[in-house]
Image (cartoon, rainbow, N blue to C red; front, side, top):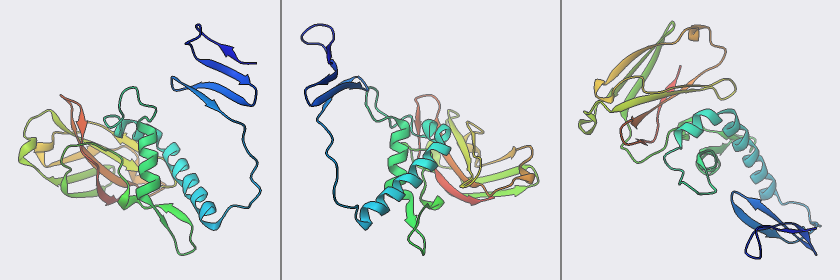
Length: 211
């Protein structure tokens, strides 16, 4: 049974006849009955499903970082939020195939922070005990102290970490204490990006390598 809400102009929910109606992200969606597929999926469809599964799992494992990193690209009121934008990027731009044709996330193509600001260049990272050393080329347009550095440590098969506003971009270098990282049980892929903390925008992340 379908229900007409809020009068004749209101949304409809439920089933009426052969169609069903429901509310999705504020929109009234009406769908016809699903047709059962009779033909088997093609090789390209199976590969696409594998890619979607890999992208979905990776995005889910790193949802906290991606929700933060894509927040300024997500338009208010849109059905596509920060997480969905990040997942789309991973699927379209960061997935590659190994020698056995299995999809995987290429960390060098991954963007964990996304925005319109000019990214950092010549970034270097090194690990000394529980100390992370970062260096980058300071850009003259970021002399204002409202421009900060965000850091993400992404473990492809393990835990990941997000550290925000760790120093000003104009410094060109910083040293960060990370207790216990010398005993890490996986490699961390390091990403840095710029955050305009005054007006709210990011640069795309820059891949710094592995520690």
